[in-house]
Length: 142
Image (cartoon, rainbow, N blue to C red; front, side, top):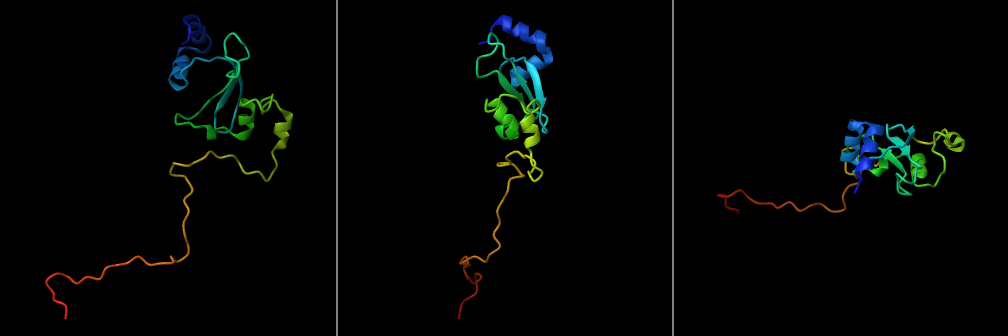
């Protein structure tokens, strides 16, 4: 349960519209330092004040799409959110110079959508389905 003082403080920091949006999407009002944005438009934040945020929940992502899932976070931002890397990709020189030229661009997992990969078979089936042979009614067979 969010305290009244924390709610008022959050409304003052982020504004009424953003506060309402956060309550609808994540169920909590958060405010912190804007760290960066990825190629999908997701915004990443951090709040290191231990009085405002629970330790371990002080980094978060604000998804650009309404229908979001965790595969929309690229690997470099995933490593920062989960404390694998200390610095975000926008400030980490190693991450900025790490991307090789042959690396494919990151795409989200499309399973369950129209863009999902569907396999197809190009070989002839090993067996044929049985098709009944029946004469039309009213005719007698010889």
